[in-house]
Image (cartoon, rainbow, N blue to C red):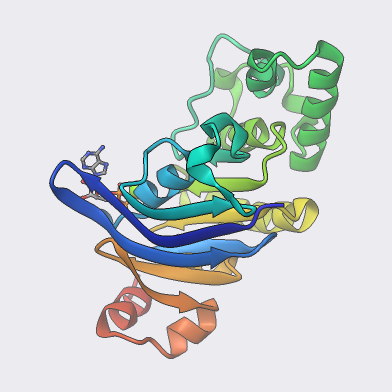
Length: 238
Ligand code: ADP
Ligand code: MG
């Protein structure tokens, strides 16, 4: 579960086309990174997958099913953003259980799911705390925990680490790699950070102006860029 198929995917906002024909097969359990400069359409592509935007043209299938025939809530896509948007008046446990409560999941099952996700993320000790008493890295873990409890087919990460300082970003990269090993769930990870792209993904898709300019294993793309754009973007000094 968690195989995505994007075929000739396009998105227009008014007269402006921002996604210009994306063809991409994402395998079950794959960790794929969308990388590229600001404004090239990475977030929009994630939002199309999540069902937060309607497709203008082309096709998106999730585990073989046409996504536009699925209600966004039934797509099994859980999104994690850079702004954690935790509810300040709720504890960590309540934040993590909230979506389940809204979905009418019984209390005992909610608690079990939250405990399991907290164990996975090693935040069990934080369950009774409020967001204001958490560090940035802890908040980001809780935000990921909220996604995990929903048992998604695919995680969609939109620059989840960009609000963290450099050393925390390194820790969270390790944590994400571990999470991926533990859960085995398909992950689509958006970043404009070359280092994240090079270290996290099984494959990277380098976006440029609404298209995928190159797709492949990170080191292969880095060593053998197809275009000057890819060479300059991945090779840029930091
Ligand atoms: P990225 O995540 O790669 O930085 P986005 O997917 O956010 O890029 O944006 C791609 C392009 O689409 C940008 O030019 C952006 O201004 C435009 N765009 C995104 N969302 C909207 C919207 N709701 N209405 C109009 N234009 C949008
Ligand atoms: Mg974006």
